[in-house]
Amino acid sequence: MGRSDIRNAPYGYRARIGYTSPPLTSEVFPFEFYQVVPAGVSLVITTLAITVRSAQEVDRSYDISMLAAEQMAEAGCDAIVLGGVPINLAKGAENADAMIKELSDKLGIPVATSASAQKEAFRLLGCKKLVVAHPYKEEDNYRFDDYAQKFGAEVLGTRAFGSNFNRIGGIPDNAALDMGRDLMKAHPDADTIMFPSPHWPVINAIEPLEKEFGVHVMSSIQAILWQALRLAGIKDRIDGFGKLFQEH
Amino acid sequence: MAGKNGAGKDMDRIRGWRARIGYTVAAVTTEVYPIDWYRVVPDGVSLMMITLPLGTRSKEDVEKCYAISIESAHTMAKAGADLVVLGGLPINISRGDGTIEGLMAELTREVGVPVSSSAASQVAAFKVLGSRKVVTVHPFLADQNPRHERTIRDFFGLEPVGVHAGGSNLVELGKLTPRSALDWGRAALQAHPDADTVYFGCPHWTVIDAIQPLEDEFGVRVMTSLQAIAWHSIRLAGVDDRIDGFGRLLRDH
Image (tube, rainbow over all chains, first blue to last red; front, top):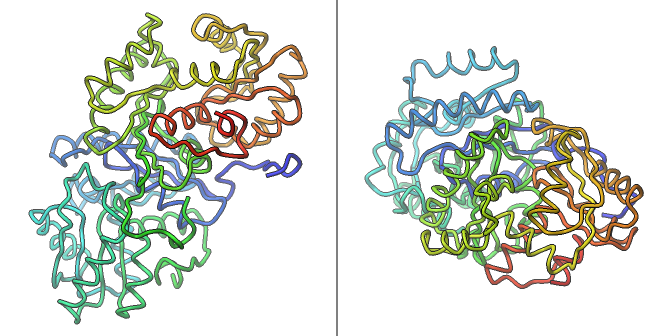
């Protein structure tokens, strides 16, 4: 950038998106955020307290989320997404929508959660029969059956990468693509591949899998970013990361 | 950052295939730091962050953040960081014994991966640049000027020749523009032409686009917190690439 054309606008000159990031450490999310969003959209991030996903950590993270949301609003964010489905639903799934409305009314800006963003993405894409590829250990498989039910879909098959929660930033780029392919070969009647968790690399697997198998791919990060952009008034159609960004 | 849709990337690799750098952010939220980080570092170097509950910079706040920083270093090492950098100059020097190198060496032994700090990075940067007379530019109110002068003189052992306060505050940092840093840097150097170095404190406002223009225009060294942290981190992690466009520190050292 030359001396005369130095930018006289902040990074988030179109929109500033607040996001509370559940893992105590955040590595993949900011990277993939900037691969996807248009220029002029910035991320304001707070890390929460999850390392092993204990009930105590989830409760603490819920409380930090509320405080962070207030600071993000004060800092001028245009929309806020509260991350972490377990945290979002910590006060009961039946209370989740009321919490969003109450917080949005209080802060005066749009608020969504990872759970609400994914629910809306499922609805718009028409996802019904899922295969799920997640980064954690097999013992976590049951959680995604539960989420799918809440989102009005059923799970036909699940693959677990096998990582501990605190190591998912070290998963290679091709893992999501390989797991998605395996699942589609085992369950060709699936209409959707779901990649839960926005903290492992999945963004580069979306488009190849949609093209190869003619299915929907719905990943947490894609749903969160799509919902955040739309709530902040950014309606750009974005190519390269699946039909959610292209068509909705 | 990699191109859209990861074009040209090797899919067998992890994000931080050359180095994964852990960093404790001395703020509840962060916005500018990861953007400027990825503009500066080479592909394959990733950033792992933990935000800290630093509010009003009260003594209690700083002490609490120091304790959390140490805990965070352990967390990031367990998560696979190759190096951990503790952010926040006031937090780093809160022990007050002036032995930042000793503290980092002790933490390195305790945590099991190399541990550095914002303060250590900036000490190293001033040293290799050969800085002596420093004018400081910071984005906060002028009531912070004496603290900055003391830090330059007492902690870094350099001569403070002036301070320029931008007049903003922590909450507004993300709204500052690159033009602000350039304008304030010019004003500082015009007011203090005897400075050999302009120092931009705080890595949470956007400064990196002002570095090269100011070095070219005034023939001085420019050292910024983020530039020093990024430079020191990648060198400690064994990444020796010379990087153009963000000052002589990243290009020549």
